[in-house]
Image (cartoon, rainbow, N blue to C red; front, side):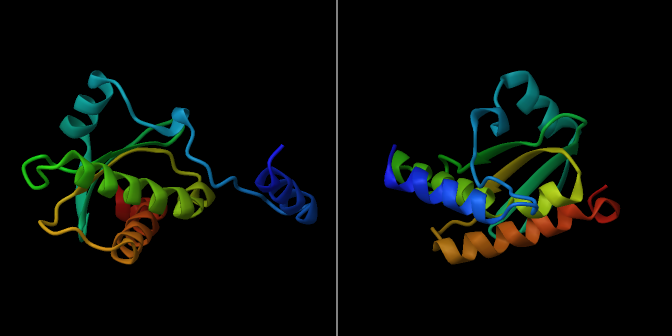
Length: 140
């Protein structure tokens, strides 16, 4: 076992009785499949939390997420991959807000700015979007 695994176990042991949310992003939370993605974009609702456009659809299953950076704005794959990685990391660290609300969504986070923004800007936009989705009356 790695030293990180031991640290994680220590954290779980020290918080007995409290709700512990793993800050992971497993494959089951990734939105994949052409049918699912097309259904989300056809029937989902949208709002903007700059520099992200969020498309969402309320579902009964587990929350699933798609991140996307357009090739038309970022010609190099390394730039698109970097932005997608930042969006996934921001979601992973802030998804507890959505999980505490009990709402489940299919989500697509589209990066719409023409310039690459630093992580702090993307994280702030992700927190704003997840807070909005956590309140069902404003999200529906």
